[in-house]
Length: 519
Picture (cartoon, rainbow, N blue to C red):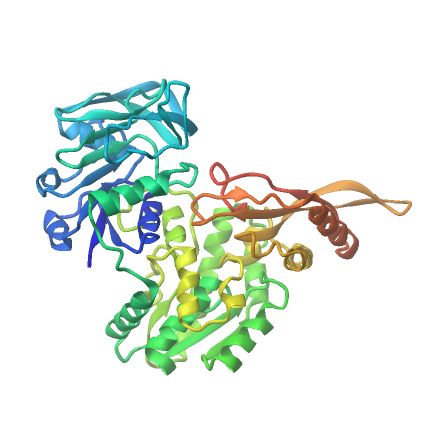
């Protein structure tokens, strides 16, 4: 099987590179940049991509690619820091720039490279091809190594792309893996398919069989305990593990009082009654609410919720004699934002309660069968496993639940208001046909009060914010352009039907700079 190797220098977008390659039905893996050379050669890649990263190549202790990769005679593409380390290691120069670029930029694409030839968004009056790209850098290349030429540039970044066509070594200062680079997928496809000359021979059915066999090999005759939330990730993980080991899997569904409306009933009906998966239902509302009392910081809330989950699993595991594994529905975006990938080089964005290993007090080994998959891949896997479409394509729901959609302190009153408001929003999205047009939609509770008027009386009640985004990978996202009529209907229903909320707003922030969830 043909494959691409990605060496990670700590970019928040590294797994996006992997996602773009997998969209081409090409297998790839991510290794840390300082991986042992033997593992690189054993992997036997058809091409190597060097990711971006937060460092500068001119620092005293700076990450660099294994110098031996330049002697493997396979194509290499460097992105952002990846390009800079290629330049630095091969004899060029990189220095700090007095003009940083973060966000959209327009560059001229020079057509004398086989990587960019005939790829453009538009052309200027001189007939030169132009590309709309996403920049994120504070350093710049000032001189090229021998044998390299400039293939992309703009006023701020005169050397925005480089090429050594003879050795098949390339670099971009911009990020082709980010959807804001409109021709980014074409560029990656050109590198992977045309320059690396790989075959598109990786697909989800093959992955299913491989994943099932891996689970069997890892688990053996041990029993597995899985935390089932009802969300897409844990549901698909449950079905995958159930397919692999059947009755060896026991699921624990914990009602922490922060679930969507009627969530517990839906989960038990789907998995316990319809699919034959063993599920233990535990109502732990009082414990979670008590432990969250007086806590305002989102990171602290996540840690408390994660700790409580672990304690409950630990208690239940003691009741089951052969349980050796704790399974979780951790997926790539969770790992990225928690800086929990293979490289451990990325800066932390926010922690995830299901990422980062297990405490010493929990004597279980960790099983994460979805850890290398993106959200759309998880959905594709769910369909391949036979889950109903309405379950698989349900919008994501965070492990901490409404605990991170209630800003500040979590209270039962707030959770009840938010549950009702969110159910109305989702109901209207489905009724209007917009649910399937958005990638994730939900309501956020704001612990502030505003003055309103209902009938002839003054109200002083809370605020709810609607959030809906469109994305292909959940690493970047655009806010959904919902019709005003729909937003107005949702607002009217929430204000009229949810006593305690008198104002509804709509979040029009993209990712980046915002995250999809508020906390």
